[in-house]
Each structure stands twice: as C-alpha cells, then as structure tokens.
Length: 350
Image (cartoon, rainbow, N blue to C red; front, side, top):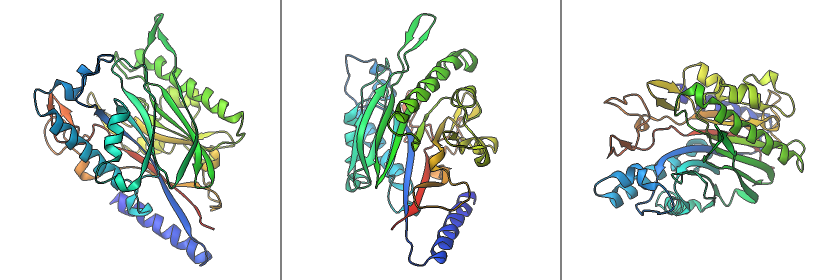
C-alpha cells in the first residue's frame, strides 16, 4: 500500500508539472544499488579463497545453480525503476561479485541484454575476491573517469584486506555526476569492535569527495553501497556528517533519505536477529530538491527500497527477511539476502 501511495504521489507531482506548462516533458532516470549475495562462478581461482563461497561448497549442480541465480538477479534488476522510468536502472552499483565474468553473464542474460549495460570493475584485495562494480546503460550514461581506492585499513598493526571503493565520474545525459560504490567492512567480532574499520572507510569516502572538488567545486555525488552500518551510526553522522532533514542541508552537505526510513522501521536485511538498513544511496546538496520545484537539472524525487513480496522469505528461520540464495550449505532458489535500493532522478526534458 505504501509503495502504491508513493507512486501515486509521483504521478500527481509529474501531472502537476505538466499542468503548469503543457509543453514541458520530464526525464526520469533510476539509480540503484544491489548486493548480489555471493555471485561467484563455478571455477576455482587459485589466487583467491573462493572455495569459501556458497556455490563452491555445493556438492553438485553448481552450473545449474549459477545460471538460475543469474536469471533471478536479472529478474530483479530488470524491474528496478521499470514501473515509472519504463526501463531498468540507468546506473546500478553492485556488491559481492567475484569478477568481471559474472557481470558479463548477468548483463547478457535474456532480461537485460537489450539494455546494453556497460561494466566498470576492478579486482579488489579482499581475501575472498569479493568486489564492487558499476553497471550502466550506455545510452544514458557516459563514463569519463573511473578509479579504485582502497581504504588502507589497519587493525592492531595488521592490514585489513577489504573491498575497494569505486569512483566513476561521467555524464548522465548531459549532466556530470560522480558515483562512489562501497562495501564497507563487516561487523564480524561485533559492531563496537569493528566500528573503527567502517569509520575509516567513511573517512576515505570524504577524501574521495574532496578530490572530486578539485575539478568540480559543487559536485553532484551519489554515494551508494552496503555500508554494514545503519544510517544513524557514527560512520555517517560523525564522519560523513550526513543530514536527515532537507531543511538542514546546505551547500556541500550530504543528504541521507534512508535515515528517516530507518527510524520508521524499514530495513534491507536481517542480521543476527536484528533488522538493519545497511544498503543506502546518499547524495550531495546539488541533487536535492528543497521544495523549489526547479527541475532544470536532475534532482532526487523519491528514494526507496525494492522489497516486493517475491523477494521476501515466507517461511522458516528467515521468515520476513530478504529471500536469500544460500542457507546451511544449500541453494534455496532465492535472490539475495539484501533488498536493492533505488532513487528516481527527474529533470525537465527541453
């Protein structure tokens, strides 16, 4: 019901815009993020600890499982934003993928191949080979620069081999935007003990933004990922200094629409019997509409969590959680243990 109301509001706002000037048209672009839950291939990579991935632990039918998972994930991605933007995401960050080959299989799948997704990916130093990446529809987004940054995190004088942070800059239609894709260190060992690792990753993001500002003084930055932190945690509030209220956002600030969702009880995963909202898309002030209804450049209209019923486990110990792919050494036929998140950017189409 809430989702239907949100789409009704979107329709009413766009209808209002049309009524104000019947000659105006509007572009809608979807930006999304999705943790793909251990999208690994079935080939043993001797340079990685990929034997620990769930698909490699299966005793048989690995190829069948792999292609079924590809089909399941492509089903979800194809529906993200389709209802209003009438196509799958223009830009989507992904996490928990093993290599570029699995992404090539994903974008060539039946449900996505006509979208002509490009891929930006780097192999990260993560011990298991878990990476982040960016997929983009080439007709909407033109990358001009991409770079991987490692947080260089140390714990008790030992380097933590975690995922890279990916920066991609490019033109969404004719507007320069910068996308930062993250998969911050997990809560292994407990939230309090592991908190400094995520704070250091957040600090690295702040450094990347400062680097962007060297050539783009008031940049449009989208910060997305599986942060392994909720929107109210210190990595966001104390390090990135995110704002939850539009009225509090000034130039250079980062707005996090998922903080309000979290306070209202929404989630993107269940972790150790806790409900968490680790998956988020934050953005800098130039992308925020503060009520002036000026859509001459891209502004965020709506952020959301894609939590359709078919993506939710309906029975068993994970009832009510995202319908995960793997459990207790077996393939469940599910999708991912995370819900994807998305936002709509809209602007006048002159």
